Amino acid sequence: MKTIIQTNNAPAAVGPYSQAVEVRCQAMVFCSGQIPLDPQTGQIVGQTAAEQAEQVLKNLRAVLNATGADMKNVVKTTIFLIDMNDFAAVNEVYAKYFISEMPARATVQVGRLPRDAKVEIEAIAVI
Image 1 (cartoon, one colour):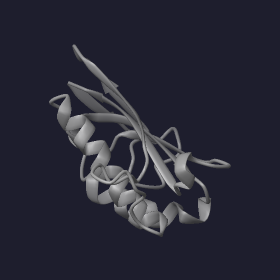
Image 2 (spheres, rainbow, N blue to C red):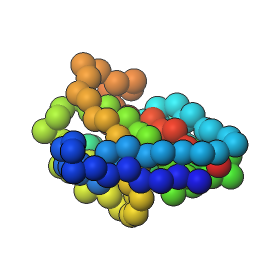
Image 3 (spheres, one colour):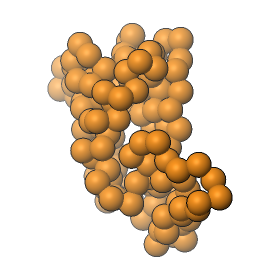
Image 4 (tube, one colour):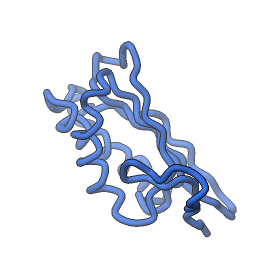
C-alpha cells in the first residue's frame, strides 16, 4: 500500500519523518488541522507546546479511527507551530505516535493559530 522513499541523493530527514511516501490506494483521508481541544469540554489542553501536541495527536488519531484508519495509515502531515523553538519538544511527542514508516512531513512557524493554540497538525492518510 505505501512505500517509504529514502535516497542518499537528497538530504536525510532531520526528525521523525520520511523524505517521501509512495502510495497506491483506493481511498484517501484528508484530516483537517487539529488543535489541542478536549473533545468533551472544548477547552485547550496543556500550557506547553509538548502538552498541546499530545492532545492534538490524540484528536488526530480519533478522527482517523472514525474513518477506519489509524496513525500507520498517515502518509503526510503538516505541523504548524507558533514558535519554531518548540520544534524539538513537539518532535519528541510526535515520535511516540509515529513509530515506524514515518510519514512525509512539513513543519512551519505561523503567526497565530485558532484559540491561540501553540500547535496544529493536519494529515493525509490512505486506506
